[in-house]
Image (tube, rainbow over all chains, first blue to last red):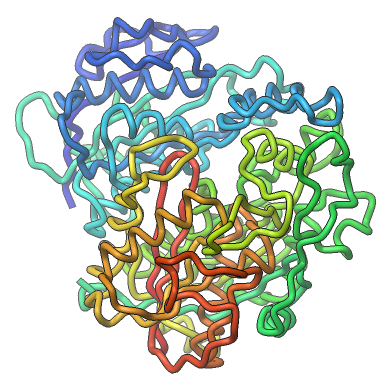
Length: 230
Length: 374
């Protein structure tokens, strides 16, 4: 089955931008340069400044991907899905929330921080802002795969007829509070998202082929990571 | 659509909840109308307004070790062996809570993939699979995605596992959100005022027909339809109009080639919060109209088991079809008006061929599954 990448967005330590505009290295050491709201949202996302890094990073890259696909604005809810793959999930928010529970046996636990201790809240925020009502969930990732599991899950959803278009991508935010990193951690943090669709489109859009339970580029190269698409 | 796909069978099921370890034990206690919701004893709640949850005593009597693994182990012991080619989908959502509470020094799994690795080791099968998080609809979504892989022929056997616990982390969070009840949760009650949390673990094996036959597994039910949808409304509250749940149910029915008039019972998310249960009744009215059929929630007995909830409710729904009985809506005192004729505090005889089950979670996600008799 042939699928089309309608657009993509990226946020890393090297900067941020659209898939159609990537120049130079996608990664460099350091923390991702999370863009200011006015640089990425056509309609203001009021809470953006109050989000944790994980949510802000994810919403920014999803916004850029939808912008690149010319799907950022909608007057009504639409059945687009969102699949996020992540390794650490929102672990920083988990720890930050836990710190509010230590004093007085939890009396001052923060309800706001607790709400962000689920890795799919970033999807909820994006779904609300961009009016997305398709299937939404997070899937575990690998450091080498960087979004591969989200791509495969998105392709599964489209093939099964569950939805027509899915925003899929990798999201891992900086870990400043977590003392024990995963054994295979490559240290790279950021977000890469694409809009994968059943829609057949020509021009600048790229093709992805699902064959033998794997994903291939239109040049018959096997896709092992979201990075292969950027 | 159904004819294009391979059939997906539910072949093995194991659960552990505050009511006990084991599917049959849980079933019997559910049918007796018992609740496991009682004062919490494994952490201090004195400074909070909420002191009760459904906790498994034999779990918390064990003072050492990672309790998520201990509870999960109970279900894995009951479900093994599984076919060697089985793909594992781990759908527990807060398995890192004890790790964080211990100051990150304990030797315990702390990422979802660690649990998946650990499950593979316990079952003695190659480690391959996924970790899915869709908040309180996680195991429901895991079952949907596992079924999707079998239906498409990319996998022949999938094990969906989840374990979530009543931890201090989660209890203080729901307490801070004022989402808990100070009493025992009362799904679909006129005076419901919040949810009760619960310990819960589940493991469910799905296979295609050939794998069931080759491994001499008895198909217990068919998972014939599934749907996942977001309501794009609020991160911690459901859309009052039930739009996300309606979409998920409609997608599940379409996939199963089933008409709304054919659905015979509904195992609801039924958390006992004002807004969740109200949203579900709105969705039921919009999809099914005035037609009355049994609706039930088991959360008055076992509490809300978060990521494990959908899997546990799927197992109970399969058992309900096989035993021809619908469990009572434990805790119900005065039925909310719109639920009259739908919800009962008594065991109901049931000779239906299908049960719809659904869950909804933070982040706006809704998921529905359609289970049919073999």
